[in-house]
Length: 76
Image 1 (cartoon, rainbow, N blue to C red):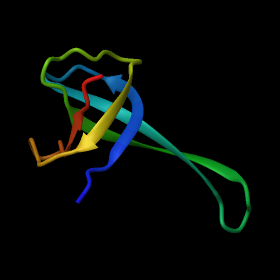
Image 2: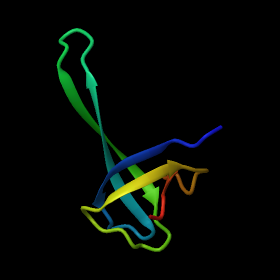
Image 3: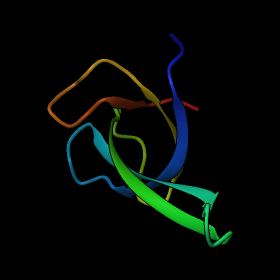
Image 4: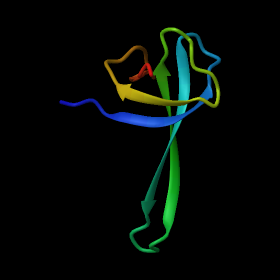
């Protein structure tokens, strides 16, 4: 099964080997027909601690690294 890949912005890099990535999605509301922006935060594994706040990164699904980390940063 293919792994999902998402793109987002790093919002926190305070933890060791972990970054918090905010991913925004846009969709049309089914009734109001307005474009809505929703964002969700993901904890992602960053082995080298190379990404800082504000960086645009791609993350992909992986096996769990910890209780909350199920994503890893794709090296670019």
